[in-house]
Length: 169
Image (cartoon, rainbow, N blue to C red; front, top):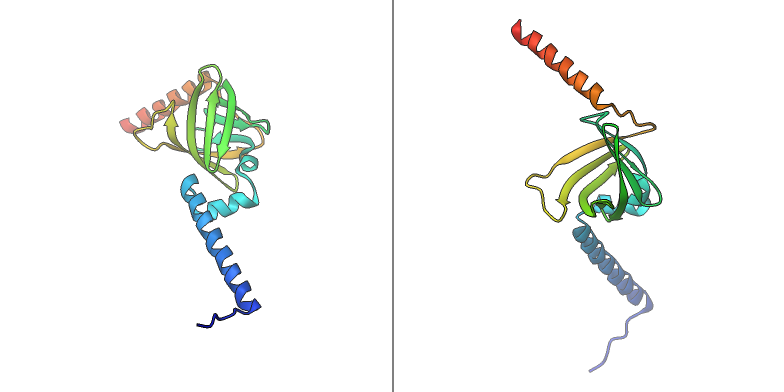
């Protein structure tokens, strides 16, 4: 039986096809293990998630109450009102792990950065999964505008007074 000899162009075409298939399988495995869409994975190749998250982030739903600052050295500051908590962060794919060195507790978020909006979805807190997936969005800002607890209580009281007046009419 005669063995058919492949031409050089056919060999090159086969090698390219094998490379494309292997790259596709590798990409699919990466997307599944990091829980990212192909678009998010491609975007993270262009600019790393480490770079995208750097900076100051103010809560969209509760501005002045919640905020984060992420630094290049892997440290972060989180703010509840004007109270500051510091720690270290680590990024693996689209998962952000915040570690508080005082309590040695970890909080893990699934995150995305789209333009100037950071979305955090809580997936684990101190080894426990939350009952509901809590999602929060933050705007990238040049300066944080944190409010004191007194200011926040005053706004709440003013809001309640306004609602009471509206309800009685």
